[in-house]
Length: 233
Ligand code: MN
Image (cartoon, rainbow, N blue to C red):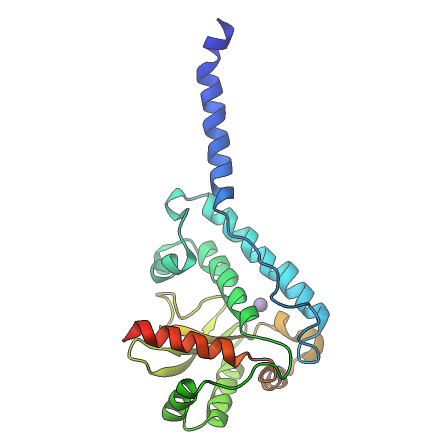
């Protein structure tokens, strides 16, 4: 008798538990770095990588999961599915969803010094076509990073017409979001938040941006370009 009477209560408890664990089952996760924390030395020091990945990126993931857990309509969706409608979503999803995606993209864009190869023939041709030369592209990319006031990102994107463009976004916005002034598929994104470089470079953001070319993984950037241009046309 007692067991039967307690069934509704048991159901409520089970439903509450399901509501708790369901978001957990689909929660975003902090993946390990694709290389050791000291792999990017001397361009980026080990402590910066430990703090940047283990604390900053982790906080974006934790805060994103907390924001998503509050809104059933957002659950079970990829960030790429949410970005085009970002202007209508809570600012916590914008900041932390962008933070999670941007950093994951950033880690994958880098490799050990000297191991990044060169742009593919197709990407090099597009860079020459749209910027004049690789050096001219690098100079313009640095200008975009230096020109971002406060915190944000510099990006190389490819538009739906196949044209390359350099742009920058504030905070953790990115060119996949509808709030971005220049939208396109990101090929390269450089983090110009002070937390990305301050321990080693202090206020010298330009030196950090110059040094990053030693660790940009052109194999990855070229593969992104190939994927973007094969689906865009
Ligand atoms: Mn960062």
